Image (cartoon, rainbow, N blue to C red; front, side, top):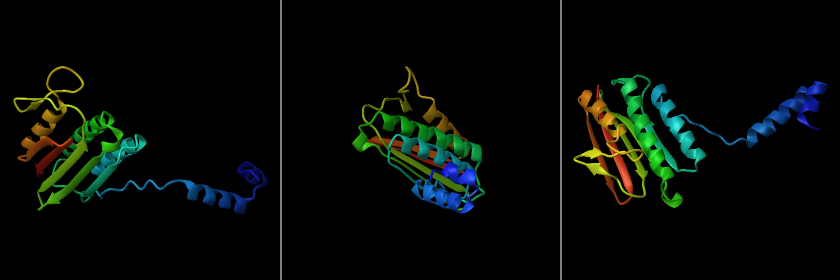
Length: 173
């Protein structure tokens, strides 16, 4: 008997059974990555976008509820790097696609973030400044990430070799 008939008949036992069966067929999308809600939301958002495109996405975030760094700065960095990783992945051969993000505290005042992704094609860099892949001229995203990390007294490093782009960011609290 279809579920709506159980509802019309007021058969709560059958409705519960139907809902239990339906829920057991829904894949689990446990998207909890860390205790920090801001980081968890950003990572979860990009994880969902990657999964929608069938791009392998790995995240290791060991961040407490309260961070020693500005959460807005952290979110801007994570968003920028993960958006770049997703865009690069969409232009990469399916079998090479991958995105990995790691975030953790080191001591009580340093936040470390690393994002890696595969890429196909050419990375254009001129005098230490990455060129935009969306338009002519300098890229804005990585320059913004650099400014934010340096503003906090932190550091940044960007490498690309063997088809893997890696961004390593340290924020100082």
